[in-house]
Picture 1 (cartoon, rainbow over the protein chains, first blue to last red):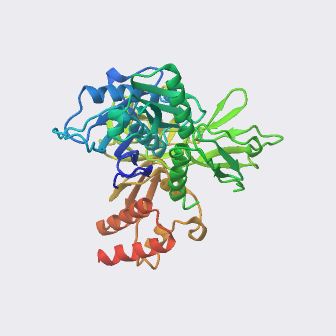
Picture 2 (cartoon, rainbow over the protein chains, first blue to last red):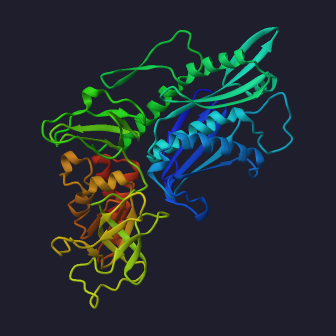
Length: 253
Length: 250
């Protein structure tokens, strides 16, 4: 798979894992595997719920503090949508391997170590949701995530969906938002300077990308053609990806 | 089976109330992949096809996965890990909590005469206890009649192959090859496979034991099953696969 700007995904790419997904969007490629529910180590055991373990592996080198930070954010938001109470004393392990991240053409990256920032979070988040769906881990709802950057250019404000590394660098603030399929805000991470009004704009933009309504008609999801729609329709994307996966899985029905 | 709708659902989606079956006598039964949120919401928890059966007043989500979650009454293939004073500990799926198999849960077993199973040996068993707060328990005997009903230790030459749970469930279904979509076993034993002689034991936990006097047959059958599962092969592709495997191993 090559890095793409539009979202692309494949599920079940790792035959030995319980569930896996490869996801490519906005120049990022992430492969994720999900195993679980499996037996938890003694120290991770919780008497009433499953422990969700997220491991982020960078494209090069070994993970450090930044990865631990991303892991803790992902862990707390994914534990909200997984039905953890169904599997007490067990472990659901999610491993995310970053394969490729977009390069900033304006800066010479001296290190081979991939530069991590919060704009990779939507890719990591979406990969874990797809891998969880592929593993058949029971969930309350699905979730979609997007990154939005705010920049001031020549005195005009601009909101950029899925910003490139250059846009992240020049932006005033970068935001990552995730929504569940019940249109509830699941995750909001921000970086930079912004006002409350600006955050509201970002929220509306991200909501349009993540929660575009689909109308159900005779079992077929119909997408409303929104003229002013900006960015990809993430929810429809997850749905169509999983629909084709289920169709191949149950071909003998 | 009288099933009507085949609607694709994702976790958390609302199910149209018109799809939920109603029946005068039977209460509504929810199968795997659905949860009931009191008072009246029924919500899918996995991605799959929603199937409703108005005759039995039941509904469930059909999906495929790799991790087996024990549920009572399932027939599984377990491997003995070790023996304790009263029961054997056996593995149903890798890295999951081990299941217990009481020493006396075999046909005609008493304290003095019970099967001596070495670590690594296989048993074909039924899940007798499964709940989320306890380790699962399995048995090789029907507790009401005391008969084995085909369960018990697996003996003879053979090998275990892993397949996906959906494929294992399909193999356990009694369906003929024309409308079933999977006819690889009949083909191997029939004219396409040159009449290979083998026996199988399919566990609901995604494990298939293939037994035969000749190791060659075991490998052919096991590979055919795994490739059919992984490649989601159709009938014609299965026929070609069987011919290729049998030819290649001659």
